[in-house]
Length: 473
Image (cartoon, rainbow, N blue to C red; front, top):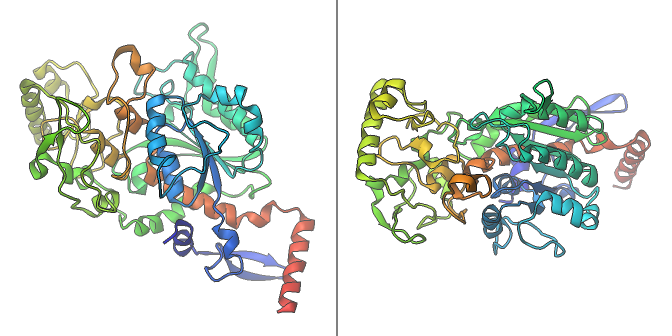
């Protein structure tokens, strides 16, 4: 079943449109037999900047959107994006213009060196999506107003100015809503969220909300700040896209056979436990072992493993020394006994093992995981004395099993600021399931709001044509 047709079947609610002195109920989306079928089957388009490995793009494609192109500066993240969503032989993939090399690009190189290319898309993009890299805003790290990555907000706004999309979708950590002090002048404060909102509000109706991705079937408590903005000549000022997303959410979960109860860590990754699968020599890294795979067990696992993918990629295990494994086993036992799951280790536990790091947590098998981070040793498995694999992190982010990750697994030292290895790619991504749910609703709203961007004369002309069509029939 095509994504747009599925969208229509699931979200065929009705709304009231005034026609003359009377009112008529009309479907928000055209039926499959409507004369408008060809019109609705034309996919809405998007461009993804700061695309990372492609989580947001993947979700939108699963929702029936056509990706025109994406911009990602890191070579490893782009390699993952390229292998899964650009060079892929079939399924969801970017259209990709012949004039744009399929390689990593910075937003600055596109703005400065490819201006004619970019201007060629002005007014032709339905939605511009992306989130400027969040490390400078994140509470998980040191906030720094001078972090050059924070300046990418200005680059995003420049893309908006050039492309003039109908809709904007921005995702970032909640920290972007905080005010930052300048290191050189503490009295100078910058709030990047307000900067974006104030700039966009000239031409767009801007809505904001913090969403928890576990509400969309993602087995992870991940709160992120979202901005959705509709150009003022595209939708009514009163439109609240987040209200619409919430209204559509139960049907989305039903469509995905997930249910209303949040998906737990165990429901997401129990089929990847070593005790159920065994291990084998790693296929991509000499000297490592990986988890073998026997198949999915839960409905969520079956959704992620649609098509019966086996063996799975990215199941390489960390090489823990025996004393580290023993420590993990004791920590798991203590955390289960104390009920300290999904939260940082207690001061007593850290002191007893001589640990200084505060972010270590043991997964709660009965609840969604805490937010995935780029540090692989932040989470300990709920029952096995080890950290998680890239694939397990990807499951907790709702990446399907066919989606493969590329590049280094980790980076250390100063390279952490320069490279985006596999664990970081997964951690930085927008969960595809959440992106799909949001994309379905925005696609519906673009369609249902179509008449509201017409000037009165155009509305009258359209009404006259409808009357003529009825008379001819």
